[in-house]
Length: 265
Image: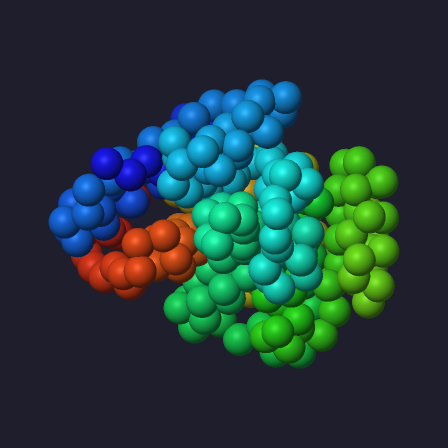
């Protein structure tokens, strides 16, 4: 039986096993998908298990998406472009690092019927998923991308990679901003709050949170109070998983009503 993992820290919030094991059963594949809490010094050993074929594939979540890069033999174009890996597999005796987050984000945003073209976007956070979001936004024709992170050095690292972005303070979000994205891990815990001047930012904005569990973070709750459109990262999660599943099993699973129900638990 083949074995697949999602690794991260924290990991309890991850619904990846629910989704992948549903698709595994639906497609009659002999495999199991589990989640594993890791410390950073354990990453190399778990990835080496792919080489020894004890593990057949790994998904990577917070905070390891850029930390696993150094342990790959090969990076795909998407992983190289972002410096971020969320899907690992073994091919031609090489450990391959790939990124399905770019397409996952883009397909998710399009599924909500939102047009990013010529829009101004503010991103809160500078973690491993942010390069994928920036690439996705640029693909979709975003006009301007503003960055904020509590650790300024991380914002500067992103600015060096994507020179046409702009670092700003969260108190200086432009009045004509169109979309605000939480790409940090703040919100995984239900007590987490992102301190923004929600009222001052105004209404009729699109607030998007990459977090999908809980389904409505405090970031989204606050935005909704002031008449804004809100969406969580559920569709991004589904689409990135959809592509990872296809890579591992050579099967494109069906995104049916049961998938939506599973993730609404």
